[in-house]
Length: 114
Image (cartoon, rainbow, N blue to C red; front, side, top):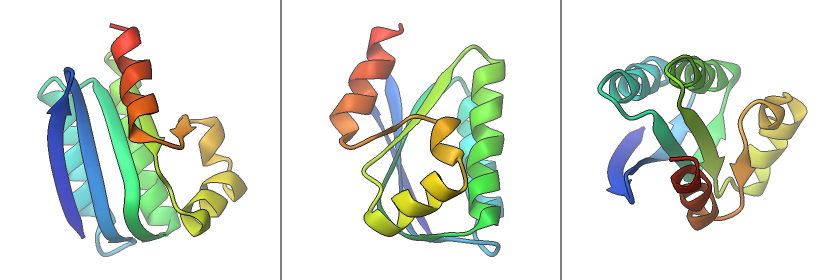
C-alpha cells in the first residue's frame, strides 16, 4: 500500500495506491487519523490507484471519516474505478461519504465549506 498526501487549496488530498485489505488497513487508519488529529479536517481520498478494498479497508476509512466529522470537518472520496465503486455502492458506503468522479469536484466542494 502506498499512501501519498499533498495540500490543494488548504485541503489535504490523500492518494491510496494498491490493495486496502486486512494487512494494510491498520496503516491506512493510523495515517488518516494522524492527519486528522494534526488538523487536516478537510480531506479528499483519491482512490484512482486503489485496486482492491475489503471490509477491513472500508472500516479504516470510516473510522477516519467519523473522526473528521467529530472535529467539524468533512471527508470526500473521488476517482474510484468500477470495481471499487461497486463495493462502495453495495456496502452502502457511498451514502456515508460523498464520492465524486473527479478530484477537482471534491476539492472545490470542501473549499466551498470553509
